[in-house]
Length: 448
Ligand code: SF4
Image (cartoon, rainbow, N blue to C red; front, side):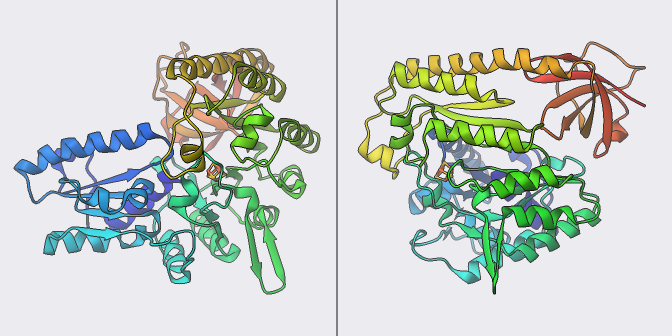
């Protein structure tokens, strides 16, 4: 979501005449997009602002803007930082070019965040965001042939540890026709893979007159768009997961059989304290159903270790769940208390940092073991990938195919595949014969 926001704002600024530069020392304007999900992310922003403050001592005309979740969360407190000129929340992205111009011409600090974010849904703001999304490029990281498209904003789940509902506001699903028009435009520009985004994408819901649209409908409508060949959606919440989505994955050829569905814990006691709304058994049953309906599905999970009160037995329950789930991969995070959340105000952060770290590593080890075994099934197979471009780690594949560079691609099930081939393949589909499988990466050779 943050990558998409950054890409849209960068595109809007470029279209207003700004030029992107990689180095802050060359820039007239420095824009920092922020995340509030963990303290570490916010600490890094404060450290950048410290550097920028020194830079501004020599170049007082330098404009510094902070946008995104941390901007919405801290508002005026952040604006009082000596380095900061503009603070803009996630709903104010369309205003950023104008705010920068204003500071450049008038030199006054500006705050643009949403008041009473949980109680007021402003239709004009939603419309402005929709127009903004349509007008600018969402080609994140410039991966050829791929784009992210927001299907919904905000979240209504209120997981007790999470700050997102307080900084991105209530769930708002975008009109399906606006999403489809945007994807058609992207397809005309050569986009082959579209990823629909939402904090809880499976709760996408839009009423238009008598008609109710859910995610399954949106997938069906997207798959009718000529030029789009692969469709993904992230992230799903395990509560109220409609099987119609699984059937759409099974029936629609373009929908990738990949499901990112965070469990967060395998302990019912902890899941309850997290306000996740399901038990470990219900979660595992959902994975069983998903595999029955979409046999080739690859599933990824997220976990938080060291949640307040997490005992060794709770953690063992998480290890058990990971072993049962047989994920394609999982992301593990150490609990980080976030001000303003229920977990922070009601529960003491009891688990020691060393224990959090150790549980984090242990869980990743369990997942690694699973990958080492499960990924061997791909060796000898020919698999279709969408090529992203040059591999950032050219040492990974020892084979050197006729002096061709090492490329990276992803399968429909989101496995990373490294192989040698011409760089011109970026943005194209290619068939790769898999020769070796590591825990995180598959290695292969391009099939002519
Ligand atoms: S579903 Fe929970 S963890 Fe995800 S954004 Fe919403 S509140 Fe946060």
